[in-house]
Length: 222
Image (cartoon, rainbow, N blue to C red):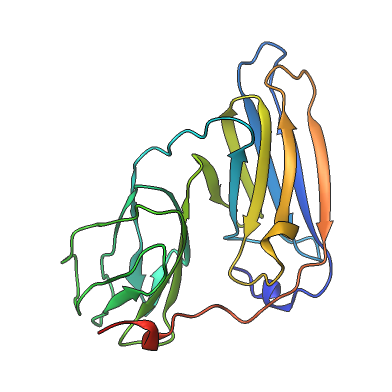
C-alpha cells in the first residue's frame, strides 16, 4: 500500500474496462484500475466481482502463503477463495505467535519459528485481521471471497480478470485504509462476451482515509 493512500482526501478514480479480443470470443475480461488523486495506482486493494442473478460458482480450493519477515506479514493483504488453505511460515529472525479474533476465522498459532504449524483452512467468507501476540505492530489482512472472481491490485493499481461468463456483476473494492461505506465502493457492470469493442466506465468517489484497522488482543479468549 502506497503511503500516499493514507492521505487521501479527494476523489479516487476507479476505472472498469470491459475487454473482449474478438467478436467470436466466448468469455469476457474485466480490468479494474484504482488511482489516487494524483493519478498514482493504489496497490493491494481487494477487488471482488460477484455475479448478479446467477448461481455463484464455488471458488477453486487453493493453497496460499502468508509469510512473516522483518516483523511484518508478507503480503500485507492476501485475497483467497472460500475453502482455501493458508500456510503461515515464519522466515523471520524472531519467534511469532499469529492469531485472529475475526468472526470469519478465529485461530491462534502458538509461538514458533520456521514452518511448524499445518495450513489453516478458511471456510467462511469475510475479512480476517491478523496480529502477533509478541509484536503489536504486526498487522495483516486475509480477505476471503465467496465469488471465484477476485484479486488484489498491483503496483499500478490494476487488477485484470479474464474468462468471466457474460452477464451482470457487482464489483466491490476494499482496502484497510478506506473508511467509506461498502455500498459506496460498489459498481454494477454488464459483461458481453461477444462484444466487438471495449467499453469503459469511470467512477469517481470522494474516498476518506481512516486509521489502519488493528486486532485487539483483549477480544481473544485465552
